[in-house]
Figure 1 (cartoon, one colour):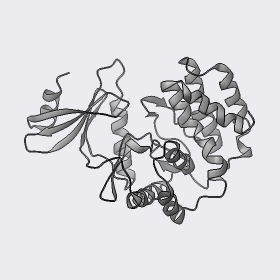
Figure 2 (spheres, rainbow, N blue to C red; figure 1 turned 90 degrees about the horizontal axis):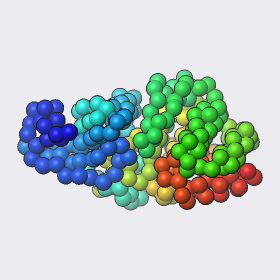
Figure 3 (spheres, rainbow, N blue to C red; figure 1 turned 120 degrees about the vertical axis):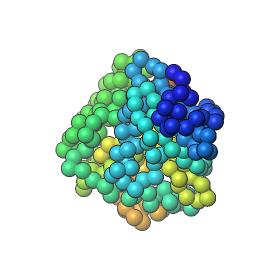
Figure 4 (cartoon, one colour; figure 1 turned 135 degrees about the vertical axis):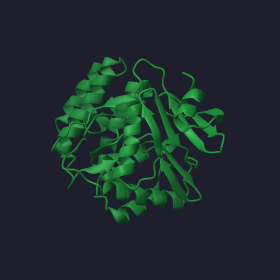
Length: 283
C-alpha cells in the first residue's frame, strides 16, 4: 500500500512527511504532515480481514451522538483510516481528571431503548457483539463474559476449567449486580493511552469500543490500569452518584470483561487475574 499516494488522493495535497506512532491494536499508525502543515493520523491495515472502517464508524457515532472530543474522521475504509490529529499526552493532572469525569458523565447521560448497539463493534481489534438486549445482566453475561471467555478457550489462552468457573459465576450475577435505570452510551475502552490531555484539559478520546451498557463497567476499567484516581471519581460522583458497593465488589466483577479481553489477546498472567476475582466470589 502506497501511503503517500493514498493520502494525496484523499486530501488533494502532497505529503511532507509520515512518521510511525506507537499504539493502536488495529493496523499500523502514522502521523502525517501535509504540505500546508496540517497534521493527520493515518491507520493502515494490509491484513486479510481489515476492520478500520469499524473504528471509523465508532468515532463518527460518538461525534454525532455526544460531545465527547474524538478525532474527526476524514476517510474510513477497511484497510485505511484517516483522521485529524489531536494534540496531547496520556498524562493527567487533577484538573485533567476532573475534566475527564465531566466528559464521561455527560457521555453516560446519553441513553437508548436497550443495551447493545445497532451493529457489532471491536475492542482491542477483537469482535465485540452488541445485539439489542432488554436486560443488562443478560447482556453482560452472554455478550461480554461468556462470549469473551469462549473466545479465550478457542484461542488456546484460557483453560476450559476456568471458563466453567466463569459460567458458574455468571449463573449468580444477580447476587451482586442490579439493572441500571437505563442504558448509557459508553466509550468502552477508557484506559491511559486512549485518552489525551493538555494543560489540564482532555483533548481527545481515541480507539473506542462503543455500545450502550452500564456506566459502572466503564468506571471499573479506568481503575484496572490506574488511568484515573480520586480527582476523577470525586467529580464523577458529584455529577452521577455511584451507589455503594462499587469499589468494594462490583468493580472487580466488571473488570472481568477487560481481563478476559486481555486473556484472549495475550494469555499469561491475565488468566491468574481472572482466577483471583473468581476465587474472591467463591468460584
